[in-house]
Amino acid sequence: MKVSKVWPRSSKDMTAMPPPRHRGAAKKPMWIIVLLSMVCVSLIGAYVYPPRRYSACYFFASSVCTPFKDWLPAVTRREKTDGEIISSVVMRDLLSMPMPVSKKPKIAFMFLTPGSLPFEKLWEKFLQDHEGRYSIYIHASREKPVHSSSLFVNREIHSERVVWGRVSMVDAEKRLLANALEDVDNQFFVLLSDSCVPLHRFDYIYNYLMGTNVSFIDSFLDPGPHGTGRYSMEMLPEIEQRDFRKGAQWFAIKRRHALLILADSLYYRKFKLYCKPAEGRNCIADEHYLPTLFKMVDPGGISNWSVTHVDWSEGKWHPRSYRAADITYELLKNITSFDENLHITSDDTKAVTMTPCILNGTKRPCFLFARKFYPEALNNLLKLFSSYTSA
Ligand SMILES: *[C@@H]1O[C@H](CO)[C@@H](O)[C@H](O)[C@H]1NC(C)=O
Ligand SMILES: *[C@@H]1O[C@H](CO)[C@@H](O)[C@H](O)[C@H]1NC(C)=O
Ligand SMILES: *[C@@H]1O[C@H](CO)[C@@H](O)[C@H](O)[C@H]1NC(C)=O
Ligand SMILES: *[C@@H]1O[C@H](CO)[C@@H](O)[C@H](O)[C@H]1NC(C)=O
Image 1 (cartoon, rainbow, N blue to C red):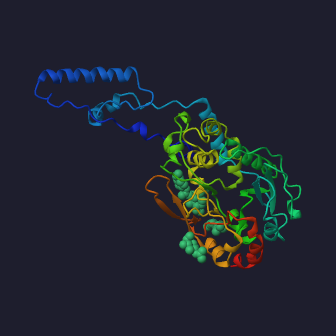
Image 2 (tube, protein in one colour; image 1 turned 180 degrees about the vertical axis):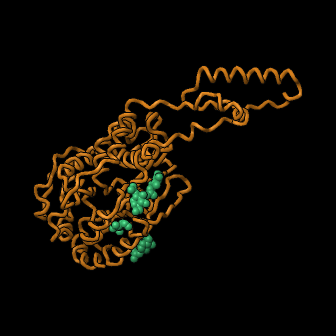
Image 3 (cartoon, rainbow, N blue to C red; image 1 turned 135 degrees about the vertical axis):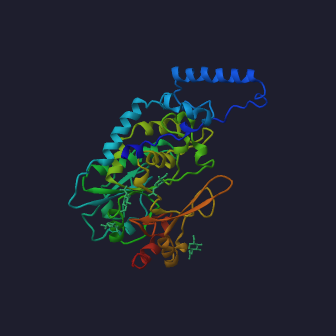
């Protein structure tokens, strides 16, 4: 059952070409004979040389084909590559095998940052009194962070340089996942940036994540230049254009999916080689790799929205960033109350899709974290934390 979900059959293969046109031919019986012999020759040809990528009905109208369907060779499909066979068995078993059970499940908070984390004091307030139910990992790609909270001291992992838009961003995410997976008590893995803040109490976030059977990975079909326009034919045959997805990088994923990401080499390699900025299509690996991977290997296992809120409504190159003066109880309550997530396509239609955030069959608030906040917002956030996270 999983297999057919994981490896959807190609519907394109089934598309028949339009019928050949023979207008004016009907009057002459000679044409009928020629036509019939052409059909015969073609049928024999199709039988002897079954086309590799297309169905045997490739050059016939389906109505002509139908009577002969039974004795035509079975529809031939593209053979899977070695890499695809390896990948499909590894993914299938990973998705169905039991995970190690933990008596004290923890959430791994994984910070991807250039340097110091301006909101350590806020996170400290959030984590207070919850020792043993979380762990912290920091990937600092530019400089060694200076800490303002003891909870963050010595939590840096080995880090490497991250170039915006390049696969080195994905590599840093994988480095964080690998370090966090070492602790079998880590059951949920949340990727955060230096400009992220929590929107709820710890218990609320803990129960929200632990109580769900999906991973929160943003994934949607954007037919515009910043979506499908970044697809490259070189990703064929494994990744077809219709499977190419887009989504925000900030994920919160289950242990099984964290392992799956580390187990993937086939799709990762395609993105490493063919999804780069400034090569005509400005492909940003971290915005497409995971959304596309999960669309292909476990589409029903992800929420399709990110639990980290960001405001793109200003329509600029960068999302809205909140300053100290922007931080009010109303703003934070407003963000926490959203129970529909929004996607906008990058084509001329700028089509907006609002999707209700449904977990366990119930509509829920979509967001647990938010970005982007300027460091100067810290004091106002600290002051308001107890009030906006209550209820
Ligand atoms: C989801 O539903 C199942 C069974 O109905 C229940 O055991 C579980 O606690 C629910 N999870 C949440 C987060 O409500
Ligand atoms: C998660 O649970 C819901 C309802 O409890 C169910 O419909 C859905 O199929 C489950 N998804 C996965 C990936 O197990
Ligand atoms: C997420 O989107 C995929 C299509 O890309 C769909 O198959 C899947 O059911 C969606 N997941 C949920 C939980 O709606
Ligand atoms: C709440 O959010 C909506 C949608 O983004 C916005 O139109 C409204 O102005 C916001 N209200 C406040 C108080 O920020």
